[in-house]
Length: 520
Image (cartoon, rainbow, N blue to C red):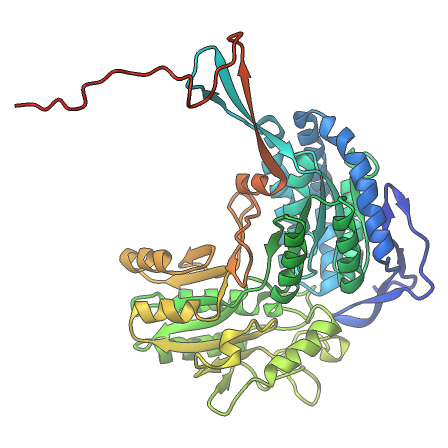
């Protein structure tokens, strides 16, 4: 049912909501664009910096809370999210048009992340290290960095923020979170659940702002020494700007960027399984995942058979109302719809277009067979398969955030690996094969941070490292124990109780050995 009174959403700094803006941003449901969800008061650079200052002031007290107690707070968050799973999932679907099934999976990702980190407060292990000198002990400790500025995209508006925020809070950092302004409603629901789990004021701050004001505020906050870590999920172009900014302050951000994720289909692959994986990873979330399938690279001997099955499966897939049983719903927002239409201009005469009755927006004049609902309600687009893509095509080398998949052929596995790496991204990839030798050869040759065998390019588990290389990121990893290195720094301590000064590498016991001895 359409909401008659939009939510009044504002930033929260140290527990206090900011004033309402004179001209708030109007946030609408992309599957029903007449459904106004919220009026979002966007903050400016000064407010972003103020949030960083509030977080900095709250950090020492939060770090002083024993780690097991911080873990208990993380457990509280997980319990609250689990108790509100369906409501939060429906907020995600209404806000960005993700299908209910995928939205429920996204919320489950938060629960899984909290479940993993609930006990990590008791496992923030350091080590006791033997010294080379007597009466001396060496230790290592994990210390929090301080204040983290977390900037996230809206295609995974609640799962990805939890990947940053949960471990950051657990390890004793405070957080300023800037969600995507086009996913403001579900972001607010996320913040409400987190803020009721026992977090003191100022430990988690929410700032709604556009990109340029956020960047300017971040630049000022870094200059004032208020931010100790930046986490960013978004485009490669913006990630490069943030990386440059952080580098000027001798900081290493955690950058989780775009992808042009390849799927290699070998001559011995189970083609039906490969088609199933290509359909889900290529068109799930309308192709708006960082892990969405970009190019299917198929052995020439099975290329036509794969293409025929993939085109048939795509043509038969249900598209439309995300609250019903469909493969995918609308584009996330007008911004992404407009950008996607620009990508469709990259289609050339040497491409064969398959998968639907047309390209572009689904309308009464450009219908999609079997569409679920009324296409006039929202930002719905035809799925597109492009056969005959070439390595020099922009549609092959650039991320195309939307429901479009290129298909190319290869002769030898070495060529497939070369084609897969050519775009320069390195987030996710997959290979479909029944030959273990091919699977391991592909894994060792590919530059992606995540490899799937007989599985799609999309899909992450909360206890496995997530992240990319090249144009997809700077090597940082989210999820599991690996993310702890993003939000802590190692500190070593040596304790000499000998009562005298022992100098390392100098006052060391020397061992006599006859190293020239040889057996007859």
